[in-house]
Length: 225
Picture 1 (cartoon, rainbow, N blue to C red):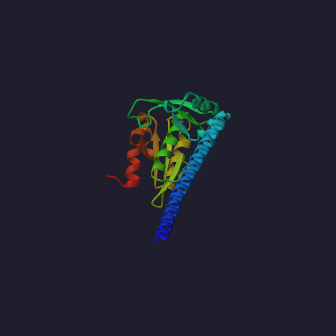
Picture 2 (picture 1 turned 135 degrees about the vertical axis):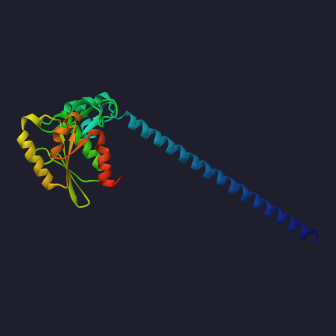
Picture 3 (picture 1 turned 180 degrees about the vertical axis):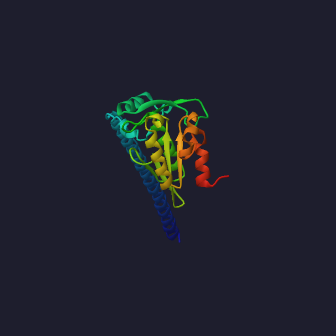
């Protein structure tokens, strides 16, 4: 009986030692895994840091300002000096104007075409920009036809920008072109850049002042009251 008890005690002792060893082994294994994860994280942080250092040390390519500047006109105060210089080098012209005549004049940089005046170009682009707000496809003409042609509800409309310079130079040609525009379009609009020109052009088409441009387009396209 005594021997049997001793053997039982010994078995329990060995079992406890094995269980304790298992606990120690599991603890050590967990600690090793945690340490390996920490080392991996440190390596990743160092790798990212090295990449940042290498990237920062490389000379940065200067942006091509002429590729960045793709619009036809820009508000000057929205551009840094270098971009203004790039526009000047590209042939843009500086114009002081109030687009809708409802606020003080500001300076703009405007791209002109051929022998076009900067004022004429500005208002052509302004009309184009307003029409594109309504999702309209706009046809821009330089030499032949109205300055701007667009479609709405299956009909063709046009705009011609008049600064008054052609009034005395080519009166007969002026009359002929507007007669043609009237025949070819549902409405032939004439945007005048100066209010004093209003009554001179009334017989040629629907005269629009810059202050009424947005209202006219809203009524036509949105059928606003």
